[in-house]
Length: 296
Image (tube, rainbow, N blue to C red):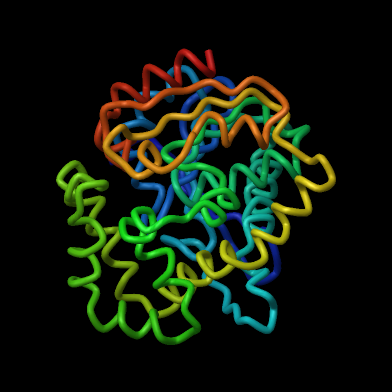
């Protein structure tokens, strides 16, 4: 799926290595995936961008072939805070020699990208978020419809090892329940080879624990840090483009552009596209058109 891409493993701390691939030439463009996925989500996107960009796709910590360090409530889930994961991205891009870069990000990766834009505002030139609203507003404005559709948010944050054991012991059932719904298009747009990569993680106890910690951090330390950022006037400074699926919960439950403008200082543009949650895999042509227009 990534013919011509070079694999890399970069140590970002003594016990964490980030895995990824790179190819192409031109301005650096970092692609960040969501849950429960890997960089393979970009299989229809990344190869088409290499003639215009230096494309870097990574597995976030806890996902794919990247390290999965242990984390507990005792460390306030800081190991998987979006600020920590944003620092991983900075270390990777610095190691590869990119002082400034742009980002395309989906789902969990977009939450990492949001924090990256706030904490490292001088490093990010432009950012694109796919099918999310800011984490803080989504928790604060949760209603019955959102909680029903995004049931996994509230399942995965339960104390360890409850969700971990249920997932590892029933990975096929979890896969069917998670991907087999309307907002994800029933998973029918995901290539079998990519789906194989995603499901493989659900059999790995360390990976499942890491993914749960990602969500536990989102419901705890990430909210604390988000509120502090807003209190101190720390917002996204670079231009923002947001795309969201017109068949998903973001369209129905949130004022997507309004919420991103509330946490940004610069221009925020975007629109709903004819898609479910997995825009990069469902409507790659639409995403490619937007990437080329927005990042030039």
